[in-house]
Image (tube, rainbow over all chains, first blue to last red; front, side, top):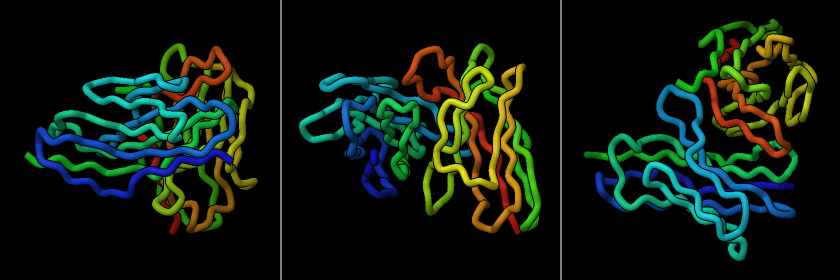
Length: 111
Length: 115
């Protein structure tokens, strides 16, 4: 079945550091890929998405590129801020309208 | 504010009991999704309703049931509760007009504690 594997957290960075959170997937066919963010005490919010190979999703300075050859969708940001502290979830949708989530990666950014 | 409202925010109950969680989707959204979030299982898709009809089912136990009403709000009923049902239950919504739509707006969740 479809699955998503994210790098284990937690991740702790200093403000303005470069962020990468790795995400790889297993799926049949051509899934759509997503990153969601969950701020403390809140529900998830869709951060960005890509629906086909080589697409780049971007939002709020975050980017992720759909790499079919490596079955990856790594999240990157060039310069993180304290306000980016949250839990980040990679997810895929394989055509069945069901989202499959990774376990989540907690990011803490220190001033 | 996502526009998705879940009540109650917290629920503490005993094993064997039954509870109802309620969700009002974002205005204009026809699709409602329910997810369970626990430390060991992560985020698990339970069920999806579109405009009152069940659209997809995930890892939902037989003790759990859901429905979406004509006004589009949804309820998740959990019965014969067990300790392992303690989790955060999220409702999410989307416009849902096309196949392959995914939840865009999540509520803040209902934290269920079974003692």
